[in-house]
Length: 101
Image 1 (cartoon, rainbow, N blue to C red):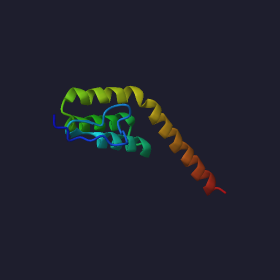
Image 2: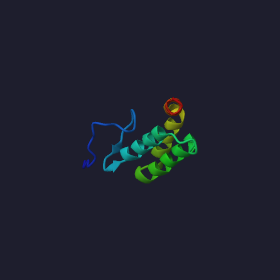
Image 3: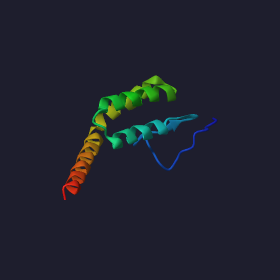
Image 4: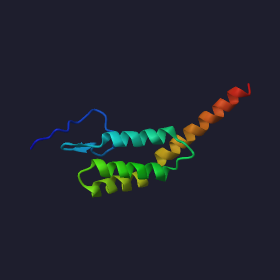
């Protein structure tokens, strides 16, 4: 069995493999997390998640895996999304308070 994929210390696909064999999609998970962290009101969560699905379908050996990851992201990442929205909101409030001092 020829495994070219090497485990990295960082798991970008929380609690899921970042790759199998020669296939690696950890970079897609990392980009998805970064999109959540950037939080842009003009880019809804569903659109970010759909982009994630399309990128996964290109990288994964089996399309059903991409849909499985997408399914779990849609169900379980809502809390992360809300946390990033809240942090963004607090940052805006802090900036506004500094402007009016």
